[in-house]
Length: 447
Ligand SMILES: O=C(O)C1=C[C@@H](OP(=O)(O)O)[C@@H](O)[C@H](O)C1
Ligand SMILES: C=C(OP(=O)(O)O)C(=O)O
Image (cartoon, rainbow, N blue to C red; front, side):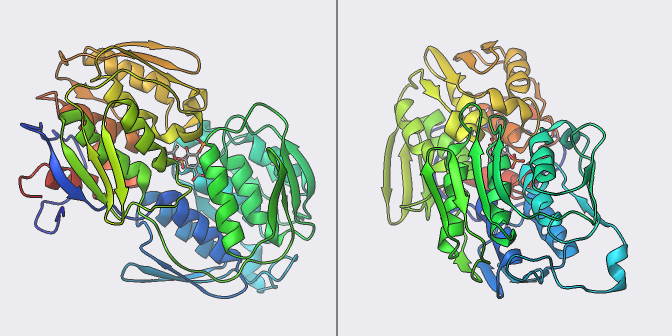
């Protein structure tokens, strides 16, 4: 198993990841899922009693969520790898109890660059009866937010936002009653998840439907439904993309967070890229995580994949096949998958990924630029990338655009591209602060 205890601290600036001299062979254990941690935190903040989260992910996105919920009134204590959460004092279907003079001071919330914070916190904030000002990183200010803002307005919130993005202010007179709502969720599944997660506290619950093209990242909506249901919330989807949540607070949680499979995919990809063999410990047999989709994707590249009680075992092929994949449901895997496509034998199509233009950065443009710089032939389409793999990669500075998954993609390419340097590797702390350490440990013989 990879042991990072004796390794140097995480790299925060430029990083030259190791080249794989031979086939990578390792067992890797990754920390908890970002998407599950942040959903559990939201549910715990709404619950009718205290909650315990074990194995939660400690990263920038989750710490921002913890801080946001504290500011809204939850009490959160950290004890080793556990979090204990006492909820915001909501009662079924009403705003939280009056907590006195302090209520007059606006609450400020930093969303960083976290989609889950900027789309999941506003519905809760609008239920508190407090003035809440939300902002984030410069790049967060261009991420799509108008659907969250408009939908909360329709449900009774009073919101000021000059550009329909962050920064925004939710006013204290907001009254979110819930009810029927149709939204265009084609730009992000998080518009749907944010409303569904807060719906148990709305007096009328919610009947929400998507009125536009299919919701992307469907796996994440399934995750939202599952965590709500597991917490005793009455949620149904009587027809595709129409969801009904009945009012009624969730139960307190006592859960173990699954490992983050989208982060794990980068390590599994190291096996695929080097004809190597990597085991990801504790890969769950049942999960709603988008990262689980990597099993089929690895097979499409020619890898052999086996899931058993010890985890996921990935054996890379001698030569990578080119692929033709619709990644719309599992879009966050795209940067990692694209790195494999850049090493494959032939031309790959990665389709259904237009919504990635609203992620941490415009990922289609960022990947295209960086592939061109290292000698990979890539064509950028509005909603797809065409990538022709090569064995003749050029060393270059790989820019990361404040995108953790660009760091991961760069590390995979570095396995077969000596001299490549990854700029601002510390940005990977968004979801995996120990990434550079785990990566180097994986490439240390005997890991
Ligand atoms: O709800 C979530 O936890 C997420 C939903 C997805 O967002 P989009 O639907 O905007 O792609 C995904 O890409 C993101 O990494 C996490
Ligand atoms: C798109 C991502 O993050 P966010 O939750 O900020 O949308 C991601 O992690 O790939």
